[in-house]
Structure formats: structure tokens, C-alpha cells
Image 1 (cartoon, helix red, strand yellow):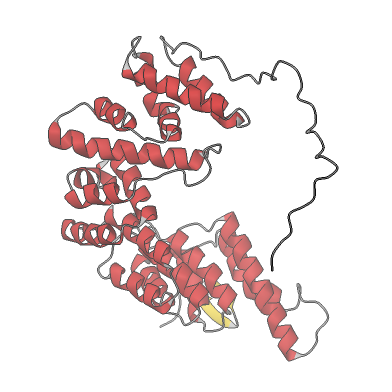
Image 2: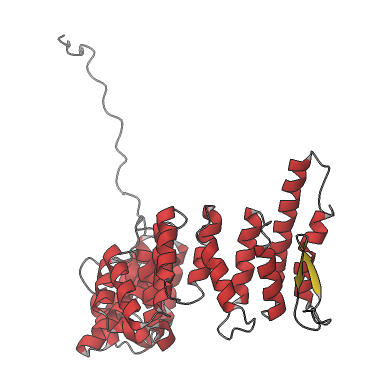
Length: 380
């Protein structure tokens, strides 16, 4: 059977690949030139033999693929045919496979505009089992981010056991997978994450819960006892000196306390703000947690409605006090100022500590010992 004339042919690593369609989009032209430009030495320096030439070609191919990915490849059948053909040609180096995995992941979408979603998923799944750990690492993550497919958890587990994924990466992807998994798998994955008490996964799921969106599995997370247990085991903190303040930790704590309050409010019917204020008011609470939450956008209505002598006003005063006690930290001073600027009834200003030099006569030097004084003899 003859190939229709309107299907262009691209040369990919010396293999002819038929491209369906009347025209090749600009991105595909770049993809098709990967081999021709590099194999003809346009980017290759003085040769040191066949081995050096091959290495130079591999480096050139990898660079071109990365540039193509940066520009973007249109998610259509032409792109998929050429990208899959290039991968299946059997001549890609390890670096080229890493770049190609990224390109393939970008071609996969819910609408299946390439018509090749199944082929793309299969190739990524195979790459996730590659003996090269860098290839397997990237491919396993790209495969998991396609949304849940039957057996995705086994691909992640295999990558974990082979050393391609570290523990945090594994639980991070398992957490992301919950949002697209069927109900029975959501329960299974969350139970595994809860047993691990992985903080990164907890952060991801707290953010998903706070979104309130069905597509983030928020209703499931809000009603899950495993989620409540995971949050109780992973409360974020400021694990460094009291004079330091990290915005990332402040954001993590804000997400955590709101997610925890959402679950408790679901169970008890209590107001979320009341739950959060009670949590921040617990004895021994790090004042940076108070500062972090009250300076968040989520706390704006709470601050605006705070009455004089209210507990919210007291918490704002604690934030200001901690800032005054650490005058070298400008971030904390700005946070305290931001909190008070959002309040109709800010706390009364506390005087900043001022160093006062001692008064009175300056003590003189110690009197010299008498001339007859001798050091006591030391006994052996």
C-alpha cells in the first residue's frame, strides 16, 4: 500500500518517519532537524576520533531537544508521530531520552489532541524502568503526573525500590496522585502517606484540602480521619533560632493550621476562626507561628473585625513583642507592622527596649595583693 503523498517524511536518526497531515508545524521542523544538524557536524568541534565524535553528537542532540522543549511542541498527531519515532529509533543517548521524556509528557493531555495518549503513557512507563536512574526518575514523575492510570502506584513503587526516586519524591507523587485516583485508591494512598508521616506529602494535601475544590479531592480529604491524623503528626515549626523568621515556614504553618481547622469545623460545627485563634493561644506557642498566620491574606477579615481587648488583639501584641525582642530581624518588624495596619483596633504600642548605661561612680581596679603574699605551694 502506497503512502499518501500529503504525508511528509522526516529523517530521524537515519530512519524515515511518515508524518500525517498536509504541513509540518514549525515546532516539528525543529524536532525533525535534531538528527540532520548534529549528525552532519554543524555543532561538532575538532574530532578526537569516533568516540569523541559520538559524544559530541549526543551532546548536540540533547541540547537541541532541550531547546525544542523550551520553545514548545504543538500537541498534535504530527508531533507525537515524530517524537515517538525518535524515541523508538533506538539511537537516543541517555541525555536525549531525558529530554524526550519531557517532550512526550508535554504532548499528553486530557483531550488527547495527539491521538497518541496511550502510546505516550506506555513509552514513559517503559522509561520509568530504565536502568539509568536519572531517566527512570524523570519518567516515573512524568508518568505519575499524567493523572492516575491503573497501576501508576506500582510504577512509583518500582522507581522507589530501584533508587530512582527518594522517599520524599515518592510520597510527593503519591500525594499528587490522590486528586485523580478513584475513591478506593484515594483511601489506600492516603493511608500509606499517613503511616509514613511524610511532611512534604502533608504540605501538598493540606494545600489541596484548603482549595475546597472537588478536582483537588478536597471533600474526601476534609472528611478523612487519616488526613486528620497525618496533620496532627506533621505540624510545621520554625526549627532554628528564635531571632530568625522564614516565609516558607510561615506559609507551611498557615496551610497546616487552616487545613486542621477545616477538618475540626467539619466534625464539630465550630467556627474556623475560633478554632485557629484557640490553637494560636495555646501556652508555649512559638510567636512566629502567630506572626506567620496573622500576616497571611487569610487572616485579613479576622484582624479587621478584632475588638479591643479581644484575644486576636492579644495575639497581635505578642507578635509585636517578639519583633521588638529581635530588632535585628527586619522581616519580623515588617510582619508585625503589616498585622497592625490591617486592624481597626491595633494593640497599644509597647516601648522598645532601650539600653541604659549604668550610673554612679566607675569602680576602680582591684587592689594589688600585699608584697609578702606568695602563691600557695601546690602539692604533687
